[in-house]
Length: 280
Ligand code: HEC
Ligand code: HEC
Image (cartoon, rainbow, N blue to C red):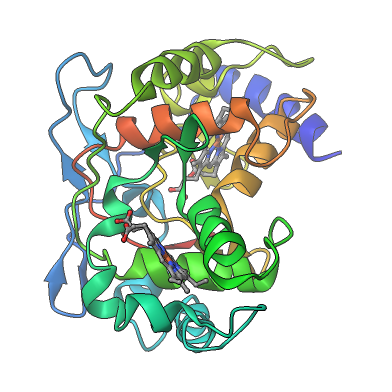
């Protein structure tokens, strides 16, 4: 249903192109100025890297700028509670080993995904949390998109608020995952024959329904979506975008989506971590 609407509207917007410039606005959160426009690294396909925040309506932008109003901050609070809660057979909490997250987790998430030598694949914050739960706490890995997984991920990423996204592709085999992610990003799939790039590169700035198409950056995840009145994880968003093209969507944390996470995160190099961002 939704995909049908989107196809029809893309045809419509081809007939009547509606384009709007991203907002000419600056984002300051808790007295920290965010980098919402960044100069791309060498070999980047875009002239300027833009935060999705610039493509949202004024009210949505204001919600994100005000930590007291931002509904995503409730998940940060919940994440802080989980951080201090003992779970699992070893009688430990995250804080038992990592103390005060404001110090030990500061800036960490801006450099994820990292290479995980033990697993021989990239690791994101969700998987790192699971790794610590299983190996260091004797607790179970979270089910994908469990509310606690989203809250703890949001909490950890929030400790990097304002820090510029920067991946070290020289780690392990991260470069080959970037290559694979790039291939997926430009690959057309589904009945509508769209690639990520069809919308977020070729048509960024255009409207699909009421949605002003952004560059599809990931620096605000998990993000609070007003439409769903809930936090949305990155792999959930990826799957939603793939589903809208009427293609089969891969599992969360599958090789395919991890490769995409590596590549798309790189496309946002230099943007500030905005977690929890607010989106429509
Ligand atoms: C028994 C000790 C222990 C517990 C409990 C523990 N961890 Fe860890 N954690 C580690 C070790 C050891 C590492 C890997 C070495 C390092 O980076 O400090 C690590 C690494 C991490 C990292 C990556 C840090 C980086 O520099 O990339 C994150 C994020 C993390 N843990 C989060 C958590 C969370 C969230 C919890 C609770 C669910 C938790 N940890 C529980 C010991 C622990
Ligand atoms: C048919 C068009 C379309 C395609 C194809 C598409 N998306 Fe999206 N995507 C959207 C729309 C619409 C939104 C919501 C408005 C916005 O932020 O651009 C969105 C949002 C996003 C966001 C959230 C941006 C933010 O700032 O919160 C990410 C990340 C994203 N898409 C990634 C992808 C990836 C990766 C692919 C390919 C697997 C993809 N999208 C394919 C239409 C598309």
